[in-house]
Amino acid sequence: MALIVEVNEALRNEAKELALAILEKQKKIGMTDKFEQGSPYFADFVGFLGEISFAKAYNLPKPVFTAQYTDECDFVLNGKKCDLKTTMQAKQKSRYFLNKQQYERKKDKIDVFIFSEYYPPYWRSIGWIEYENVPRVSTIVHFPNGTCAYRMKLGELKKMVELIPNET
Image (cartoon, rainbow, N blue to C red):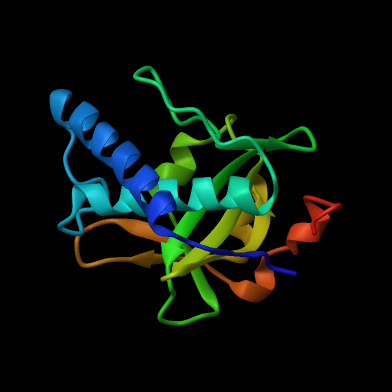
């Protein structure tokens, strides 16, 4: 069962503040739009919104972000290091993407990728997959901006209750 959180103004403002702080940090080291989609702030905003909503939905402590934050993992659940990936409402509801460069960067740092979706004003958890299974159950998609991603279908993701047994 996917848990749903209503995203209120306070949650959006918290995500916005964190995304702007990361944007400033990235500018100082010369980073630009990480997905080359024309909005360097937006990807981090959606990501932070997902992490804050996930913590609220599953009654977990919110992730702590500091100037030295390295984004190695978002949550540790049942001993598994988890990276939460949040997308805006998928145009094709049965497909979820994982940037290939991010996947490779997470090698040996992540056990599980969790997928969630923000469809204003709601956020919901979708499912999860073990790191090592991503290439086996997905196809690689090349985008016009030169980036590529693993595309997974909803049916390839495990139910959240298998990762968080006492999900309510």
